[in-house]
Image (cartoon, rainbow, N blue to C red):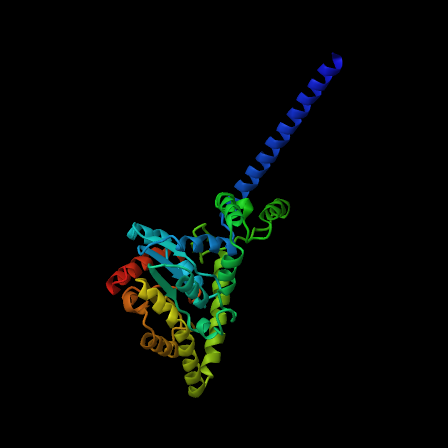
Length: 347
């Protein structure tokens, strides 16, 4: 009898220890979460292959009242998904842009050949990245690794895992995937008093990218980017007219590779629009040479084309790093963009 009573008391004692331990861990995590929020950390999800695939999967079930966004960081930042939804409540919007990978040929081919998508495909064009195209699976700017992942690795287990991670990462700064070990940084700050580095961008589960160039890390990134653009512009200025003509020819050759996919989408009732998104500094790629390539694109494709200067010249936009809008400007630009798409007759 004593043994039974003793075991019961021991179990109750251990249960209290475990509950206290759980409460202590939760309290510590809440304190760390609060500390991160106080120091500027914002929850963000990991923009990985699975997050892209989660959006790509939606394409298969959408009808003509839908918009697929293709491109790189410009379309991921400059186009506000929330604003599009507010202006076009009957439309579904899918963000398929890939940061640092502006050659969308592989994604355009995937939509044309592997889906029945009949909506609007809005493709952000960055001439330099188009020039880096080789074949569908080559080139440093190619999105083929993303389409390959969707075709060969995406499945129900990955989907469940990604959805759960989205819920957690969108609500907890301690799971911040882009700043190296934020928990360690908070503990280090408590010990040293050194200021915590905070990233200037966040990703949503819908793959909307939000940037804040007023933050210290944002200003540093903008300065670095402007220096890179200046170097590129100086190198471009050294090219002879003959070399530029060769590059223009190569550019059109690469653009024409996309035409069969544009035609396929259009023939089943879809609409394809190439769009040039805002830049505003003297070193950016909106110079005379690139104006020539845009003219060549317009005359060589069956797709609709839309240049930001066509509709936003009266109230110009500022791009702090030379090629991306501050996210507070994205809604205003998106409103103008949607209106222009309506004028083109694609919405």
